[in-house]
Figure 1 (cartoon, one colour):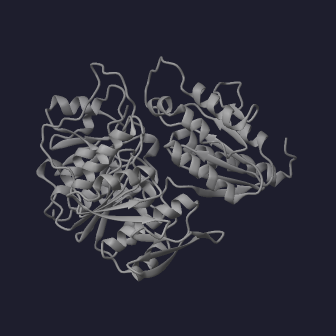
Figure 2 (cartoon, helix red, strand yellow):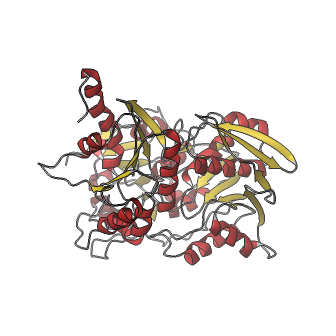
Figure 3 (cartoon, rainbow, N blue to C red):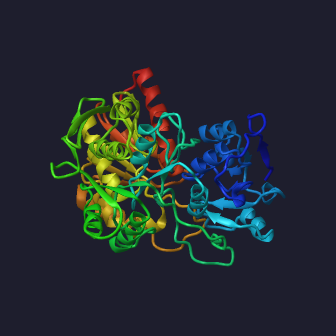
Length: 508
């Protein structure tokens, strides 16, 4: 494969500022546009470091690549051993490679450190001299972290996010304060069998895990392949809490309630609760949906504050409430927070209305965990009085196998469900298809005839055609997933609908 190099637009590099260690001074990020990786690259570049990264050629002209080049990151299209320049100090990767990888092979030949994204993030933040504010949890941190970055964005605050806000970037420089998303659930992590080519990050370089001054923990729950049960997730959350000065816990999450019991009346962090009942330290009165935005009312330290936020879904409104509560606990001015979150339209993984054609509204969602999927399906109900048609592309063989019954049950509020093949980076998989179990669970939840598989083949109708055949004016199509099929389906479906409307054709 030819290697196409795209040089950064920035003229010269900023003088490096104290902070990241020398090992990151000339880091190469494998698949630099992946969730979590882009934010890290942008922040490292903002510190004046010489950062390079490889990217899928299909994404070379995308928004992420443009942001990286603008920040001074040298982006290379394709994954080739020649991308590892002689002056590189380490390689960083997200941990999702499930096949031989020429760049990682070359790094190991040169005996350079290979750092997991989590490892590199810890090293990068260890030397930060300002206030470190974190968002952690088993899942569901994307909206809260992006909202928190927006709430604290005073011109001196930086952030490293797994998913950016819809009108922002996942990484940004700042010297006074840094917001980081510590959730491990960034992208598809497969439990691939160990083989000679299996790559594992080197941990030869010692590091301390991030020690934030304030941490919001959004959820504590089983989430395979990251946490095989709630106890494992609870232990991880407890460890994060004990490295933190003040912990903010949302009481609408059952696991967070258990964590509060673990932390109460014992030596450790200060615990601040946020909830929808009066006994919470930050009381969230019932969020009011106004048709295109939520009116949020929070009572903190005896004072009531109101915020208007244009997000979709009550659960995302509550995530913003948790972020606002964290900003207030961090000492931010409520009026400044209100002005900043007023333009926050959600994270890129939260539901968004893509458009309406032929009377059919298309909404996209990047939900991964079954609980998030269930909440997004319920939220879609508020956007139409007609049928809700859900198109789901499950994430990863490992996750889908472990959560098959929950994934199927999560579709219960839909009228129709269409299942795409499981998205996975695995080049080969010879086990049972976990989509079979998802389909059975969905049929139990929705009934016979309401669940359909989308199969591939030269004589098989594509997903756009299948959705087109099953919808009518007034219906809403919710496309859920982060794989390439799901990412492209919404736009293709709108394109499929436009000619029929323009020509006045009858619906099949």
